[in-house]
Each structure stands twice: as C-alpha cells, then as structure tokens.
Image (cartoon, rainbow, N blue to C red; front, side, top):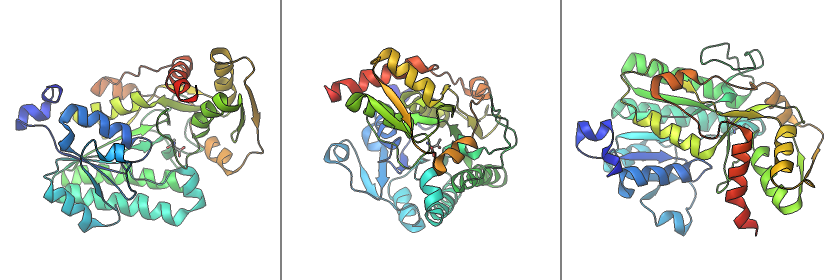
Length: 330
Ligand code: AKB
C-alpha cells in the first residue's frame, strides 16, 4: 500500500483523512486524484460550491462546502474525522483586481475560517501562497524566501496576510500550518481561472487551434512557472512531511521561468515554425506581472524536505504540454 509509506501511517496505523476546499479548480482536480491514489478514495473529501462532473463525482466523496460558512465546514470536519485540510479556495490576481470585495471576503474570511477550524480541531493545514505575495520592491531574480514583500495587488495582500496569520497561529496556538509560494501553474487537463499567468496555458490551446496567440502580457514579462505534476507532487511532499525538521512554515517552490517571447520561441521550435505571437495593448494584468519576481529561489524547500522539480526548464514543460494536449486536438 503506497499510503503506508509515510509518517502519518506509522503514528496512527491508518491513512490520514483529508478535506480539500476548492477541489474543482485548476489544482484541486489533480490533487484530489493524487491523494486518493495514496490514501484511499474514501479518505479524501473533495468540496466546492459548484456541481462536479459525473466523472469527478464518481471517484470518491464530494460535498458542498462554502469556505465562508464556518459551521458548514466544521460539520464536515467532525462528521468525517478529518485530520488534514488542503485549502485551495481563493480568488486569483486578475479577478481580485476586478472584484476586490470578493477577493477580500474569500481570501481573508475563507482562510480565517479554515485556520480557526485547524486550531479548534488540531488539523494540519496546507494553504498555498504565490509569487503574487511579492511586490514591486522585492528583488526580482532568484527571490529568496525571506525578503521585502510589500505586494500591491489585493490578491497578493490577502496571500501575505494568510502567510503571516498561519505563522502566527503556528507560534501562538501550535497550529500545524504549511504553505508554498507557487509560481504560475501550467496544466493540460484543467483550466486556470482569473490569474495573470493564465496566458501561458491559453497559448498552447491557441497554438494547436489557430497557430497564433495574442498575448495580454508583453514579450519580455518573465515570470516563474511550473508544470502541474511538479506542483501537486511538491504539495503532497510538504503536506506529508513529519514537520519537526521544517525550519519555516512558508516555502518558495521554484521550477523554471520564461517570458511570452521565450515561450513562443520554444513553441515554434517544438510545434510549428509557423506559430506566431502578437501582443495586445497591455491591460491591468501587465502591471500585476511587472510587480512580481522573474525567478524565485526554492533552495530551502530542497534542504528541508527534498523539493526537486522534474520540469526545471521551459523545453521540458512545453514538450509535456504538447504531449498531453495534442491527442485532444487531433
Ligand atoms: C495568478 O496569476 O494570479 C496565479 C498566481 C501566480 O498566483 N496564477
């Protein structure tokens, strides 16, 4: 049994029971699948406020959960003997700038509910952060874990608040809070929603459909990026880690970095010489991208819990995306 191969099993003689919020988003779908394969389908409770597809619904327990409803969440935790929560519900950077009230509500109050739940019921809580927690005065290259933050988007401000509240509850109340600053996540089988790095997923679909893409970010906007399987594996690795050798609670997760022009060049090389990219008038997302690092340093994650990305350069990531997507466009 794969789920027996780690610390939790050694301590409790059983697999952990996990609650996932926002499980129908870009990351949740794959994360639920991965954890179900490790801990057993029934031990991973997927939740969201949307209706799942029949296919998703049939792979294991799914429940309605609104992160703004503390009692509703608490009922799921109590009724299902939950040990760990992975909190994926969030409003991302672009939607956050368009709808700040929604982002404040979901990202601050939703997280606070989950954090209080973790305190009351002694849950391990993993809630991802982002390169968006950095700001314009942050050093832009190989950005370390600990540095100037000062984000200037609603999304970034709420994610930094989340990091600090998680650390505070860890120190003050012993909550086993863990977080990862994800780069832009590139996935073939699920769509991102409302982010600034979304162009780097759209571009593959446009390349296969039209051999052309019009980018909303300028050619030189280099940002940290990561292929989804690395992201999911890293998330589970930090989640499963015994914790006593973690030197911090929030880690940068690095893989590769590229700009729209560099990505287009790689697509031309691997897919079609005729692929072309155009650039629209920059919109508000350009300013968001300009406030984030070009690359981040994930070396402490490597030291503390063995982080090691497989897709550590652009060409590997592009090759994998075409491998996954081409059959769907054939
Ligand atoms: C976004 O672009 O908002 C997200 C992120 C980098 O956190 N993909």
